[in-house]
Image (tube, rainbow, N blue to C red):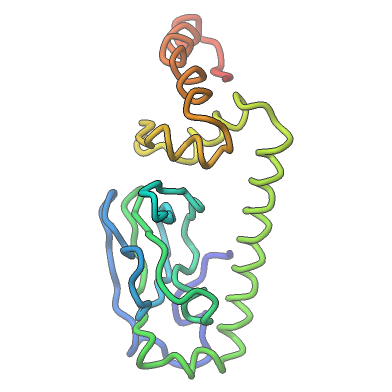
Amino acid sequence: MERKSLGELFSFDITSYASPVRYPSGTVIFPEWQKATQLLYLEEGKARCTMSHENGAVTILDFVEGPCFLGEMELLGVQKVTSGVTARTDCAGWMIRLEECREEMLNDPVFLRQLCIFSNEKAIRVTSTAACNQMYPLKNRLATFLLQSQRQGLYCEPHTQTAAYLGVSYRNISVSTCGLPEKIRQFAQENLPVTL
């Protein structure tokens, strides 16, 4: 989505319904299973969207980066409760109170156009990720995942969630990552580019 100020996304003055927000890295932006009462316009930062299952497993749904909307599916009524959203980096944006302006937003052609653009970009990104998970070997997918999920240069995801996201077993992830630090050290000593 093209970087725009909050006012450019609406044909009416949204600022009276919005509050500026900041979330430090690691902060829960939207807890899971809550009734959505707000829409977040994330101007900058990265976040991780997750879903918990009845058996206690957690699935990573997506990694998002500002500018983007979070809570748009709940706004449209496609999803009734929130997915978990956690800040991966320091995030800043605007929280819009839906109960005060939902109908106005849903009847605003400027906002709906921006929402369509964002939703289509998101669909393309998710489809591309799914295609890559089928077409490329694990080492390539894992390298991409490490770059996406890293936080200040560190890999902090549980192997169980990484395995589920990449569609492989926990054992495959464990085997693939066990020699990683040594391989990176070796390439760094030889001043070679790191390829996994």
